[in-house]
Amino acid sequence: MACFLIIGCQSSNLKSAEEVTNIEVIEWDGQKRIASIDDKQFIQKIVKALDHAQKESTANMDFKQPDYKLHFNHKEKALFTMGYYKEVIVLNNKVRYFDYQEGELYNVEIPFLKEAYTQ
Image 1 (cartoon, one colour):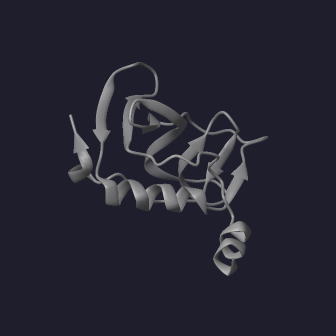
Image 2 (cartoon, one colour):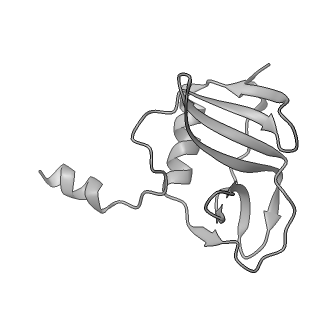
Image 3 (cartoon, rainbow, N blue to C red):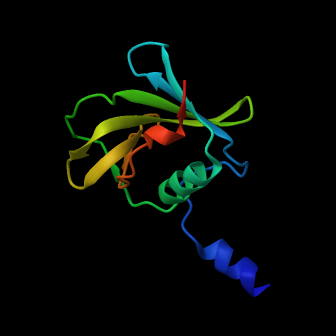
């Protein structure tokens, strides 16, 4: 019961209870697939960081579009999508991840590891 209370009090940004099994990297302005990431440890690291990250609203901000769209999937099912910047952008915080549907930037700087890519 104590474990349930601890988990219930944690901050959670991501709304999916399903496990992310792969991340598809797609060009922002097109549909060209750049990579598919299926490294379980890396996926867990990035999902945990995003789930507990500080966020900031993009209301009244002027900034460039992300370089890529990231499709976080459970097998073939899309769970959520975010924008990704190859280079850290500095607004109020240093960020790489953008929930463009909610208009929120995630204060997470973790880059994608080239070793995690399969093309």
